[in-house]
Image (cartoon, rainbow over all chains, first blue to last red; front, top):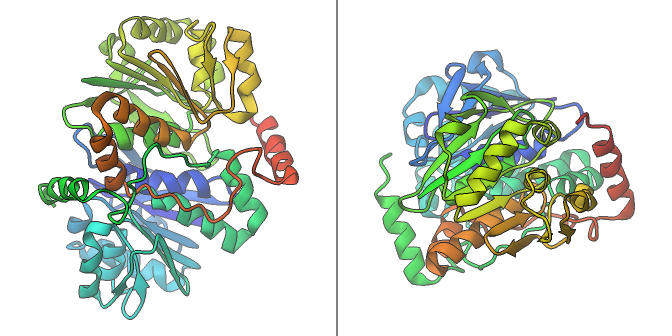
Length: 212
Length: 212
């Protein structure tokens, strides 16, 4: 089974690497990091991490699982017809089409979310409406073969759920144990409903200043 | 403030990228990915992800925060006096010295854990004893300026705790919200105490077959 993870400049590293760490542990799968051109891709923070795309998009036309991460660079991806065409075409034959964070806006721009419930990064959730999707703040939303996940770290939960759906509970548990995913965040502020209002405002302000 | 994340061949990607995604969001920090030589570093799974080391070890002799990830490649790192010397020397002047997963075995081999309580990947926990450490299965263990974390995904919790210690609760909450870290794993098998015994045996068998 082939899994294609889309890479693009200024993606958020954990959006891609969280699900990668889960899905690459499924026996028999092959994960490909696909970008417009193979080679280095810079991620989104001030101290950038560089990931390598090992193949061009045209080298993985029909992945079984498509995973689209997000990050500030998604706005440029949504203006790139070549990438949207690839996403649309990969989705036509995929077994599962998935996104993490603002990756759902890319799926939306490709026309994949019309009439579907979908999630994504909390700050950009309402933007899903312009693509005909119905936004929801659930962490992982499955609609047929389309699975969208909330922001950044949610890709780990999404990928474990996908392993459970496709390969069963025991493999999902084995992979959860193999990445020792027994989360114990020291504070409880992982959603806008849980974080104190002044913290939500700090983060809103920081996001509003990010160039897209 | 400078943060150095050690990279080496066959590291586990999420060990490094989880804490990176947290720490790189602290205003004013600079994260450097340091390896014996700058350039591409392959991670540990069958479908490898390649991360780029942007600097050589000697370019970051005195990081304020040292982070040592783990992965199957750590066994080779422990046999490499040049890397152990760098770890030891960076630790001498660091503000915080941290590890994720089997990265604690590297700290141990560098002589940093003698007489300290420490954690690490559940499968290799007892191996910490050979370095004079007292293993514990807690998720994050702080002993003075040394912080060790359990397997793979625990680096996210560790890094948020470190932000809390160094920069306070509000920044830790803001970063938790910015990565939407509100974990909802679909199953509850993230530690050997929680996973069913037959699943623990499957994972033990798989780890025993990994070349180190």
